[in-house]
Image 1: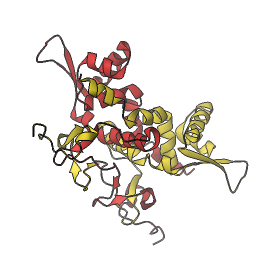
Image 2: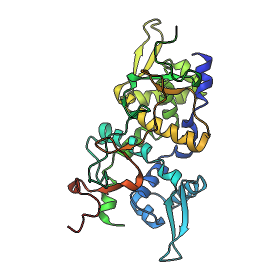
Image 3: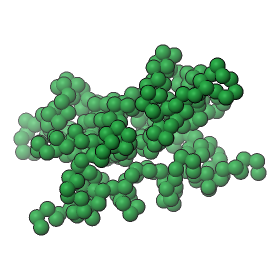
Image 4: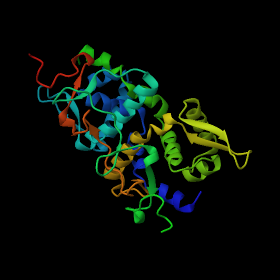
Length: 158
Length: 158
């Protein structure tokens, strides 16, 4: 393996994302939050998770700035956990994994579906787009060092 | 929490995706595979992972049909591990997490970058698109039961 590749694997956002998200329960809590759940007891019921694990993971998500803990307006003894902007930005990752699970694991389409408010039509598949919006498949892609940006494939010997 | 919501959380592709992928090392192995690594010793070196854990996770990925184990053409004592189509289909999830990590964790853009072979320009952000390709933000989305597909938001009292 070339040294440059080994070194460059360290300069990647994936490890820091997994540091935060590399836990099945955290994903499941986020999924419930995207479905509108915000009270501790409702997370408990929805996820079938142990109380101490839920408490630990919610604290972790709050510490990471992914969720925000506030006091419920209607009942000040209750806390609410809501997604921050940083948390909402995890939606594409969650949806991409969910769609993959539908295709290969579950074998059927999930319900409920996430749909466009404008026309009620389900969202499209989460995919990879070029800077100008063209859809790209794996065979259309190449890894480039930042110094090589703008070079089409096969131009290495110019 | 409405019963329908609790029940419907079960009909989702995310748990089955996390069943397979809910492990930090599996993600890191896949990332290395997308970077072209295919030999056991190269995974070891790239990831700084213990031999028994790597062996266990590679077997798991092969069992799940995400990677394929073949004998190396040039050295028949060596095994190669390559992504299957099912594995390649995990790329949007990985890239979405990587971009999130860049934005919030690493604070800088990753290197190397994944770029379009045609023009060498880095891919765009992984996002959510409508069926007709429009970009959608969280506020543009609604959860719909499959029976309600095609209903714009706010039409519930028609």
